[in-house]
Amino acid sequence: MNTKKYFKIACLSLMTLASTSCLDLNPLADMGDNLVWNKAENFQLFANQFYSYTRDFQMGDNNYGAGVSDGPHSDYRSDLIATSSLNLYSQGTNSIPSEDKNYTTLYKRIYYTNLLLKNANSFDNQEAIKVPVAEAKFFRAYLHFELVQIWGDVILLTEPLDLDSEKLYGKRDDRGVVIDQIITDLKEAADGLPETASEEGRLTKYAALAMLSRVALYEGTWQKFHTNGKDANSNTERSTALLTIARDAAKDVIESGKYEIFYNQVLGTQSYRYMFILEDAAQCNPANLSKKDNKEYILAHRHRDGDALGTNITHGMLANVCYITKKMADMYLCSDGLPIDKSAKFKGYANPTDEFVDRDNRMDNTMLKHGEAYWVNDGPWRVYWNDDDLNDCKYADVRSNSGYQNQKWCVERHVADTQESMDYPVIRYAEVLLNYAEAVYELDGTISDDDLNNSLNLVRLRVNPDMPKLSNEFVTNNSLSMRDEIRRERTVELFLEGFRIDDLKRWATAPVEMPQNQLGVKVTGTWFETNWAAQTRQLDNEGCIILYNNRTWNDKLYLYPLPSDQIQLNPELGQNPGWEK
Image 1 (spheres, helix red, strand yellow):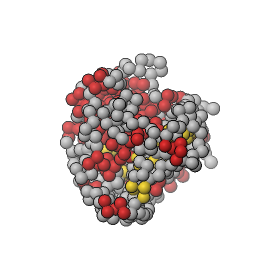
Image 2 (tube, one colour):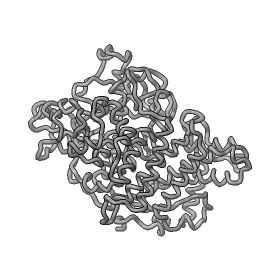
Image 3 (cartoon, helix red, strand yellow):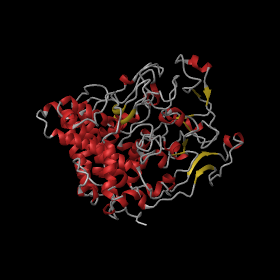
Image 4 (cartoon, helix red, strand yellow):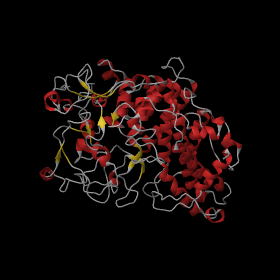
C-alpha cells in the first residue's frame, strides 16, 4: 500500500471517530460542512471534544502522559518509583517501536483543531465564535507541545491539509519553529478566552497563560542546559527570551488573584493529601469538602460520580503496588528546612517510622507509614470521618517490595472501581508558582526573597507552616544551592503527576540521575533486618534493598525514537539522533 493511500485511510477513519466530551456534549465531528459550520453554537459543540485530549489518570494506547501509568511522561519512566515489572524506559533499554499510537493520535487531534479554525475563517460573526476558536488554538498548542516533548523536531500543522498534501510527507520542522507557533497560539488563546470560566471545567485566559509558562520554562531550560559544551550557567538569547515569557506568564496568573493553594483548617497538614481525592457525590474527606472548594486546579480532566468516564486509580496506586524509592523518601526536607544530610532533626532509619519524624508533611501525605491506619474503597472504607473509623480500618505493613508505600490518589470512601470521580489536575496553581520561581532564578542566577515568598514558599508552607521559608540567607547560612532547592520543591510537590522525567531531560541531569540504582529501605542494622523474614532482594553496600540495577543512560534517550511505521510511510522524517541504527 502506498504511503498516501495508507494515510488517507487513517484520516478518513478519523472523521467517523466518536468521542464523548468531558462536558457531556456530543462532539459533532461526523457532521457535514453545511450543518456543522453554519451556526455559532455548532463551533462550540465541536470544540467540546477537545477537552478529552488532556492528560488523565488512565492511559490506554491512545492516551498519554499522567504520572500514574506508563506513558511518555510517566513517573514510572523516571528514577523515583518502580513496579514489579522492569520498566524499559526507566532502565534505559527501550528500543524503536514498530508503531506508536501517541504519534497518530496527536496528529489526528491536531487535524480536528485545524478543521475548526479553517472553518472559523469564513464565519460571518467572529465575535460569536471567539471562545471555541480560542479553545482550538489552546489545544492545538497543547498537542504540538506533546509532540515536541516526545520527539523534538516534528511536523508543524496549522491547517487541515488535503490528504495528498506534500507537507504530510516532508521533513520535520525545527523544534524552535514549532515552539514559536505554540507560544503564538497560547497568547492568542489567552486573548480570546474569558477571565472566568463560563461553566465548570472550561478554559480561561489564565489557563492559557499557565500553559504558556509551562511551555516557555520547558523550552527555555532545554535551550539553556543542552549547551553542546557551552557554559550551562549562561543563557543564550533564545533561552533568555523563553524564560522571560515563562516568568511573565506565570506572574500574570499569580497577579490575577483567581487561584490559591488548597488548604483547609480542618484538614490542616493533611490538606495536600485530600486535595487529590476531592469528589462531589459523597463525603470524601474529614472536612466534607468537595471539588468546588478547590481553587488550585486551573485546568482539570473532569470526572463525575457514576459517569462512564470515571476513573479507577486507587487500586493501581495504593500501598505496595507503587514502589516508592529511597531516593524519593530522602528528598523530603526535615522540619527545619534542611536536607536529611544537613539536619540534626533527621532521626535515621533504625525503626520503620523514624525517618518520617520531623519531616516535610508531604512525605506523610504521600506515603503510608508502617502501622498507619488507612482505608480503601472496597473495604474497609471510611463511614464516619472521625476516630470511630479506626474500629474498621487496615494498618499499613510496609514489609514488601521497596518498603515505601503510596497513598496519593487513593480514595477512602466506599465507591465502586471505575466510579471514582476525582478530577485529574492538568494544570494546578502550585505548578505555576514553581514555574515562576524557577524562571526568575534561571534568568539571572538569583531570586529575591520577595519573589520566593510570593511563589515557592506558598507551596512549601501549605502543610509545613512551621518550616523556615526558603530565603537567600537560609541558603547561604546552610551552604545550600538555590537551584537545587527550587528543583527539590518542584519534585516533591509534583511527584506522581508526570513531570519528573521531562524535568530531568530539560535540566540535562538525566545522565547523572537515571543510571543510579533504584533502592528500597535500609535493611542492614535496622528493624527490617530482624522483622522482614521474606526479604530476599539483593542489598547494596549501604545495606539498602536494590530494586533495579544495571540502569543506563545514553543521550539518545533525551528524545523518543520515531516509530518505524511512520518512517516507512515518510522517509523524509528521518530518525532522532542515536536511534538511526
